[in-house]
Image (tube, rainbow, N blue to C red; front, side, top):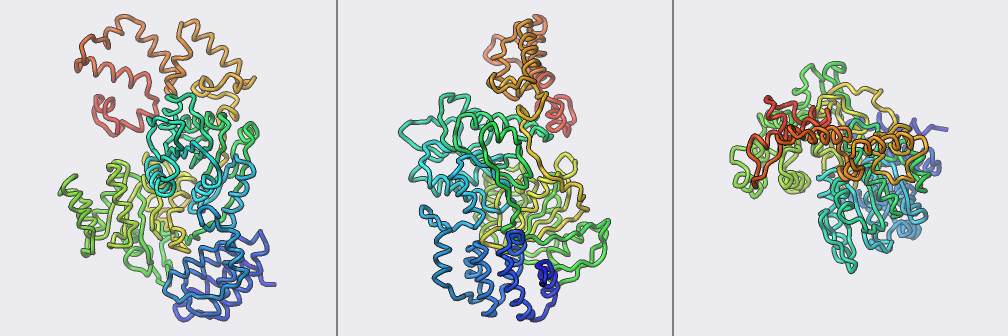
Length: 604
């Protein structure tokens, strides 16, 4: 019997032909796919092949009917909706059984049709109420949040998003859907009333402030997106705030839904301690085609959408060949690792591009409120834009809205991770021009896969394309095992231990904790003081306290006037920098400034 993997190879070869495809062979492939959908081991590959065929927009009625039958059996009914929107006169025969099956996967509350995996996740949550889900980007994990809220009687819901960009997008989505039933807010300073119901969309930092200001606040259900960021093995100091908020909300007894992409395992000890179920999926709802355009190691001819492109030793010329010299359709996200390179490449890309229909209202706004000479204005007039974290938040949002709009011709968007860390766009194509992050370190596996996940958007594309312009190191494709410091490390940092309830400190950790408290008592330093200064170096705090206890040192910073003098201000900021900033803080934030003064006072 023919292997399903042989069908994949045959289809790839078949669609390379620029002429009329062999309909009989496509029909044979669809019949084989339909049969293999009964085999759970081949389900993901079958979905991939369904997308591969659907993307070709074939008008043949027999192929359309077979494709519809495969879609129904895959239980990803929205593929049918996507085909119906194409100009191919897609009108297969829909049986009563098809209608019944779709109805089974359609929410009685929101009338949203779920995919088969989404339905499984929703049912599992309703059974367990505490769930971790690992699934690829564009899988639709956040769609399930709406179903959970709609089907449960929650009074206070918290949605924790890792970045301001994601927070802003989620806030508008939930406000549009739930504004009649819930007060939707993104402020940590909101006053909670017992008479109202709330959906609070916050970053971990804002959530930490809300907990501190409202210690008696009862939360019924919380979501944490990109939950892998709580892993203490990450070279990222934000893990402490993620982990602390996760700990406090989980201990509160609230229902929880923790989500993230490409997580192989999540702390077994944490899951057992708090009775949490984990589900893992590797199904790509929007499939990806990958092309390696490494200008150093992969020169030669590459075929993209039936067009042979010659890869040469000039990275920028290769970019022009992919974006302008091929049949590649759709919009482009071009990733660069630093904002200065993002702007430089966007400005260079304008050369030889004609003017296109553009949003004059947006141009006027930028010229009047930012600058008439800002290069973004000229970019937009030629269908190009850039996006990075140094841009004002509202400008970032305007650029994304313009890029996602079906009106106008904004086709190319150059960006850093400010855009690729989860913000949805209509880009069908993603180009990784660099394989580094902002500090020049190699792009880690999760970061790279998140960027790749921006290629193609469900309900718009069956396939997305990913282009690598540097060599991809395969060893980066290691699995992600998330570990939580206070349960998985035998020697957690004291910054973590002091924030725990004493009963959550393990026996092996307790000896170090008791010794530390004794040391504080001997120095007459209150433990409560250190606990209040969350996520600040404890060693630095103790050193600063001892420094200030020296009266001659204290006089350097003490002032009685309403405002400190310039020299006092400089002294205060200097001592904060010297004692409370970690080496990572200093290196990441200030190493681009020339003067010592600048290194201390310009937080960039």
